[in-house]
Length: 221
Image (cartoon, rainbow, N blue to C red; front, side, top):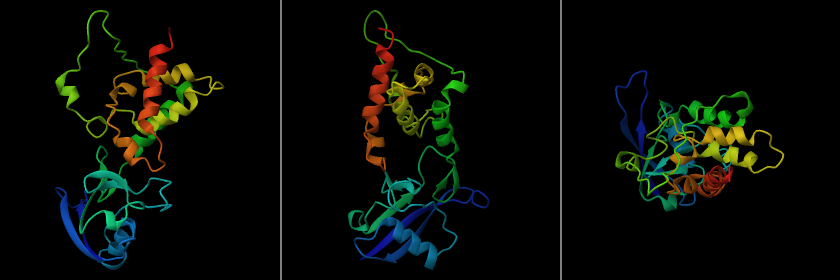
């Protein structure tokens, strides 16, 4: 099959703004998008930049926006993507070059909950009103969680914390819960399951976040 890759390019050293480049690639329907990207870089344009590592859906390094959805290039088959495929960098991160983004905020979020004993958490607890229903402000309701708010600790960090919070041997449970118990912690999750679709390990991330929310709500009862 012949496919056209429409890739969003950006080199901050020379480009004023992102631009689109198109590449025609011949491939097998069972090839992955990563194979097509490799064909572009190896045989058409060596300046194209993107991350790849295990190529087996484990590391998640080749996560990108594929036809408008979060996915891994090493797991997305060309036969399921159509004749014209749009590829963009992940939202919510600073673009280093082309499809490569700055992952430091991602790793910082994970480190924050894993080093709970070494941190003093800033907690902004929003409890339920004693009388009546608390309504979310429309401006917050319309704002997506992760890519619109770099302060959000992120689903990966919450899942890492979940692993320890529900382990009876964990001595940092209360500190981890405190770190997550603020508006940019678990409460920022909108429960729309985007992270479940994008998770390379098939983890039900939204369910794990919900369990952390329950642990917070019932821990003092």
